[in-house]
Every structure is written in structure tokens, then in C-alpha cells.
Amino acid sequence: MFYEKSEKISKGYPIVGAVCFVTGLASVDLAAQTVPADLAGISIEDLFASNVVANEEREKTGKRWHLAYQFLQSDFDEYRLGTQRLSYEDVLWSGPSEQRTENNYPVVPTKITQKVHSFLLAYDFSEKLSLKLSVPFIEQSTDHISIVPNYDAFTISSNGIGDTVALADYELSRNVNSAWRLIGGISIPTGSIDEEGDTPRAPGNQQLPYTMQIGSGTWDVPVALVYEKFSQFARWGLDARAVARAGSNDRDYRLGHKFSAGGWVAWNTLGSFEPGIRLNYRWQGEIDGDDTSLLLPNPSFPYPAPVVDPTAFGGQQIDLSLFVSVAVSPAWTLRAEYSQPVWLNLNGPQSAENYHFSIGISTVF
Image (cartoon, rainbow, N blue to C red; front, side, top):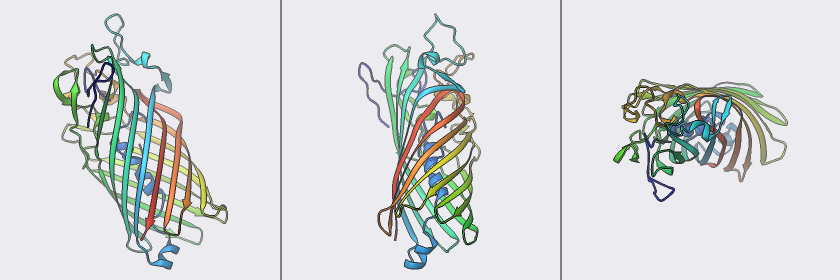
């Protein structure tokens, strides 16, 4: 984690200077004011969505190992309260001349950029069972505005290894043109939840907000049920995924449970070039508990920024994604995906995702 300071850019922030995401990674699975651990989860969606090695490839070559690298990026740059759009000025409390409410704050994150480098190693034990291990490296940068003197505009960043995910992918049934798969595993809390930075709250370093922590701090359980259908011109599928969080972490909070469901179709009539489209629904709960080191000694308004308010996390969204897979060679595959939310209903006020992009390459050996 690092930070820069100048006339417009200052160090870290939690609390009266307050704060800024998940990552982690990815996948991925990750709706609005997200923590890095959730971004890392987005990449897990890709693990859910595809088999490690096709049966035909295994039978022809006997190759059982799978290695992949994926880069993911999400940008957040506007606020939502439910389905209502809010400007930064709507969320920023301007000082004693304006009434303070539960929906305005003296410090407001503006543009949030989250990046994940995800590394996957997998092995096919049999035609039905594959084991997968994913390790993310997460980076995040957040710009802020505030009414705190000398911190009217500043940027804070953090980075590090996120939570490690181990999955078992089991084929429940298969016939000539369809298959059912069950995937489950565990997310190991290897990502830091103790990131610190120099903030307006006091001299020296203090604990950074939830959105700047790299991991969840809890042992989480990701599960998924996937259905795939194959035809002459296309393949399509449906899936449902969830992440259940166990207990609270060492800082007395737990990130929200997650659930998503979606459908996709990919056309296979263009040789090695396979485009597709996906529609996905995501739900996530609020943060349970409080990291008390992020609170101000003000019983009426203890939260200096929306990213330290546990109730300003979670909500619902629907994403529309376009993706493409390209078989570069018999052993190498390139995949890219771009998605945007088409509907948002967020607990808040909280930052809304503007877009999510991923690109990755994988091989079998």
C-alpha cells in the first residue's frame, strides 16, 4: 500500500479523512462499493463458468494440468441510493451551514479503480472431477474530495496478495448434448485486513476502510451449480452461484454474503473465434458488524465517509456482458469480457460500478 501527497494529492485516509474497496479480485463475482476481496471473486465466476480441460482434449492428449492468468479491472465513478443517481455534491456534507444527515459525509470517494492479477492452477483427476487453485494479486486506487483542511482532494492506494480460493469441480451428469456440474470449495483468508495509512484523523498511520482492505478476513465458502447445453451452432448455459461467509474476522466484522444467477450463449460457427453474450443478476448483503477503529466519537454521525458505513454496502444489480474466446492454438486459449450494469438498486449512498473488463490466457499441459 502506498500514498502520495501534494497540493491536490495526500496520503491515506480512513476516518475523518476517511477512506475508500475488495478486492481483490475478481469476478469477479464482485455490484457497487466493492472491497478488493469481492473483485477477486469475479474471477471465481470464470472458474465456475468453464471446464478446465474438454473431455475430447483429455482423451486425445492425456493432458490434465491447466494454467491460466487473468487481468481484471473495474471502475466506479458515481453514486446510487436505491435506484436514484446521486452526484458527489449530493453525498458531500459541506459543513455547519448544511444539515448533516445519514446520507451525506465530510469525506467522499470519487473515482475508484480496482485491478486484479489472478493466477490459476488446476488438475483433472478424472473425467468428472477437477481441482482448482486461484491466487490473486490486487491493486486499488481511490480519489477523494472532502471538507477537511489540506485534504480537499487526495488519493489513496493499496495492494497485495488477496484471498486464495480452492475449488472442486464435479460433473453430476452428462448426456450427448448437455451437462450438470456442481462446484464448491473454500476461500482462505490470505489477504490483509490490516492495511494502514496516514489520514486526517490523527498523526501517523491508522486503519484504512473496508474498501481498502485486500481480503475478507474470514473463511468463506463459494458454491455453484452450472448447466450447459450444446448444439450444432451454439452452446448455452445457466448457473447459480453463492459465497457464504463464516463468522467474523479479527476486526469484528464480516463482509456480506453473495448470490448471483445468470444465463449465457456462445456461438461456435466461426471456427476458433467464439463470441458470446451473458445476462447476470447479483445480490450482496450489507457488512455485518463494525471495525470500531473507523468510527468517530460522534454518536449521531459516527461515519466520516460512505466507505466506512457498513449499511452502505450491498444491494442488487443486473449486468450485461459481451465476451469472446479465441483458440490461439490447440493448447492455448485467449478470453476477454466487457460488462456494464443495466440496472442498480444499492444500499447507500454508495459508489456504483461503471464497467468491468477482464482478459486472460490459459493453457493445458
